[in-house]
Length: 124
Image (tube, rainbow, N blue to C red; front, side, top):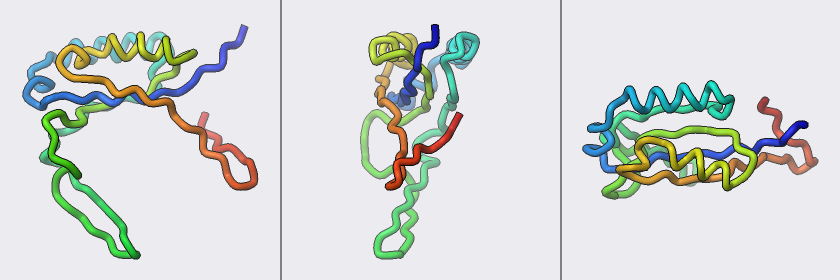
């Protein structure tokens, strides 16, 4: 029986000091278990928010600013792109992401891109 899986992006947010205090070994073990189950499509940990660059294009002009767009206590620390059969399974996976204990995980379904002619983007 074939089950159509949906892609979800799990955005990992937290206070940088708390995220940095976590053991990378735990995050790497979780990542390895997701990959072994065939649920992880991609994942990365991000450098501190102070290394961020914000790029905007307005009226054809490019603006580059050091740092994040908004001041916030919790910053984007990383992500997991996962496959799940439904929202319930995606929530179950997101709840096991180690930084969920010190920060939060924003779970977003991935939207398929469809051209004006009805053609869907091929990614797999």
